[in-house]
Image (cartoon, rainbow, N blue to C red):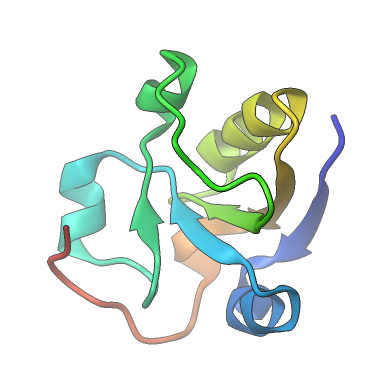
Length: 103
């Protein structure tokens, strides 16, 4: 594994500092019910199927509900050469506002 972990509470600062993309790896229904602002949805299941269309020049900052799926996604993406940061704690530990809906 070639990625490191940060606390979920630092996700916004890390995204700003690194110019990264916040990626929610939960299922679509979970994402729509509430996600971190500016996050995009790329479910772990799609990653496992090889459906990855993310820019390689950007840092991808991953999260899920508790941290398990984001760790699995970080392994997959880092093995494929993406720059990845995984968050520990997931949305259960996140204390910021959430956005509902989304594309």
